[in-house]
Every structure is written in structure tokens, then in C-alpha cells.
Amino acid sequence: MTMITPEQEIATSEEHFKALQIAIRDLRREIESLREQARSGEDINETAASKALGKASGMVATCVKVETYLSDCRNRQAGIARGGYALDLDRARADIGCKLDRLRRCCGARPVLK
Image (cartoon, rainbow, N blue to C red; front, side, top):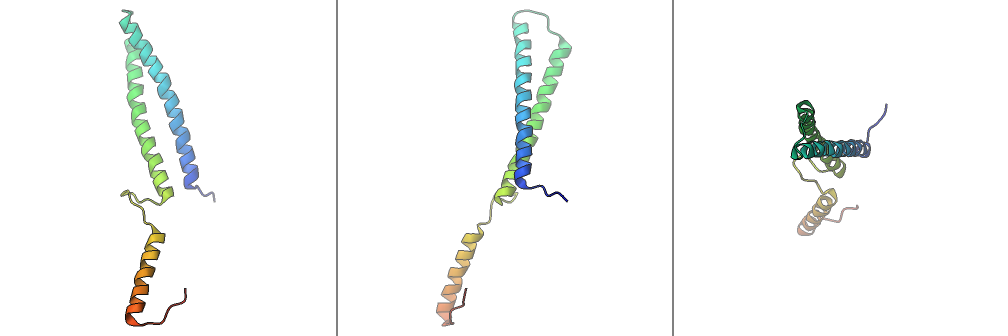
């Protein structure tokens, strides 16, 4: 059985995101070319223009999904819950230890071995 780690998920998502960035850059060049054709008064192929605009909106939606997924992966790796917060277990352990020490002093109990 193969185990997929958060690091692998992040690396894969980053690769997908980079590929999308390249595709968007190419699409942007295509749209800029169409815009230049329109400015110069050339006839524009409506099918090509419509196709380019359709690709653009689809890629933007895909980018948003990949960014969200990548952010979720990073949060999982960092131990941050979906609500946007993380539990600092070391801090909690220290706080509990301090409170237990105060209780022991208050009640005159003997020290507990750690």
C-alpha cells in the first residue's frame, strides 16, 4: 500500500498550479493578439475569440480550485484545522503543567515524577 504524504500532495498541486500559470500566460498572449487585431481594424475570427474567452474563464475557475486545494494541503501539513486555527500542544502541555503545579502547592500534595 502506498502512502501519500502532505508533502507529496503539495508538490503535485504546485506542479499543477505552475502548469496552469503557463497555460494562462499562453492564453493571455492569444487574447492580446486578438485585441491587437481588433485595434488595427482586422477582421477577428469570432469562433477563435469566443473559444479563447471560454478557455480563460475555465482556467480562472481551475486556478481558484487548485489554490484552495494547495492552501488546504499546507494547512493540513501545518496542523491547522479547517476553521483556520491550530492547536499549540506544547503550549497547552506547559499551561496544564503550571496549573497542576499550583494545585499541588495549594493542596500540599507531594510532587509527581515527570
